[in-house]
Length: 459
Ligand code: NAD
Image 1: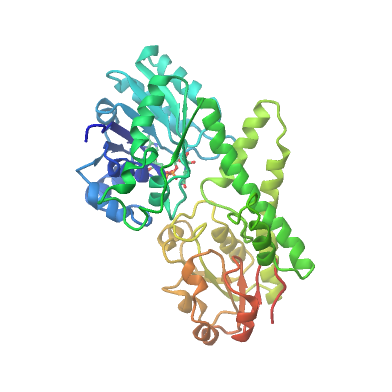
Image 2 (image 1 turned 180 degrees about the vertical axis):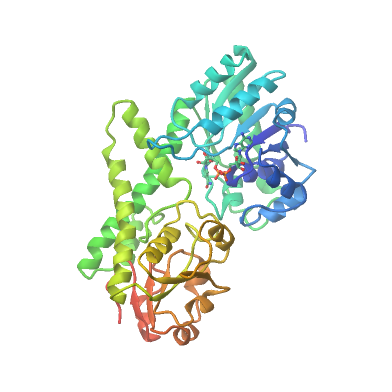
């Protein structure tokens, strides 16, 4: 393909791996680098290290054609014009983002340089990281004209990552000069001019309905802030509806009706207005904290973000108390827990409210039988089976003989349970739903006591 760009993606996690296969899908030549040798070996053998819809097919389609995997960073850098950094930026001890993985990668890149290249921040990083990346390159002896740094934040959601990458609402390119912006424009051209969406071999099922993505070019600082501000705003929406749900519950209103009524206003929109156990995952908690820290560093007290965090933490306590309130005491009780991942359609358990809750219930003396369609292996690695915790093969096995069933993650299959069968399995027909997957009246018709979030208890 004439406008193919040689790309190196460093990091083969949820973002790096998806970006690598999707860049191959839109016609580029990609080398994906990771320092986790086991992951690289698995990928080279055709394995898929994460649970993500469409990823197995995309990997099979492009492995050793459009994309190759290696742990040799210098090889990746030296054979590429654009280098996307997609390593983790976890929360540091002060709330700030820990950029040590980014720094380690940048210094390695500096020593491998063999001509002009554009370094692209794909990881979520605080404002001014682009300047630190430049400074780091210069300190390691790279000449100023030999590189540029661009911020190109990623907005994909786990569970729909491939579709999100190929059909984004927007592509943000934060570049401080035309030369680097132009390379990014070339890379994303198939998505921004729409040519990808007419290709016969493109990802099926999503083609005709998609318009070309808007590509927005800004300064690097603005792009860095766009990412933090977007995640903080989404977290705020979730905390807002959760705060409203607490009010709804005490005045016998229904948060689902309230959210529907609010969401119909096109200025508000229905998304991220789902009341529940609060947000989790590897992004929102750390990005809200990092954005708050960034503002503080600049002398700005962004107190609103602190409230967003507090409401989120409180949401879990409220649910825990609801469970205790329904069961009187917890010690020795058997509870079925449906869901361990931080949301449905992913195996990611980082900062999962579901997993935190399971921990709290165990600490309170309860025995938990847990089930998750994709996250059990990862959960078992950090919460091994014990006298108080077992992992079930399915929802019904988890429910067998339980004093109550808790729904902790919004997997679609948990909203389609065979209620008659469930009723038979449980010792007491009590369902405490942290994700509002059922209509209360429907659960009562099936003989359940049903407690959910922001709605009156139903008996
Ligand atoms: P991840 O932990 O799944 O993957 C990071 C990968 O980088 C790992 O495979 C790790 O082995 C590798 N790595 C670390 N140091 C390395 C080094 N020195 N050389 C080569 N490889 C190295 O992380 P992720 O979820 O993909 O997130 C990556 C970044 O993208 C983060 O900044 C995150 O905030 C951001 N982001 C994540 C999502 C998401 O939904 N996960 C969405 C948008 C943005």
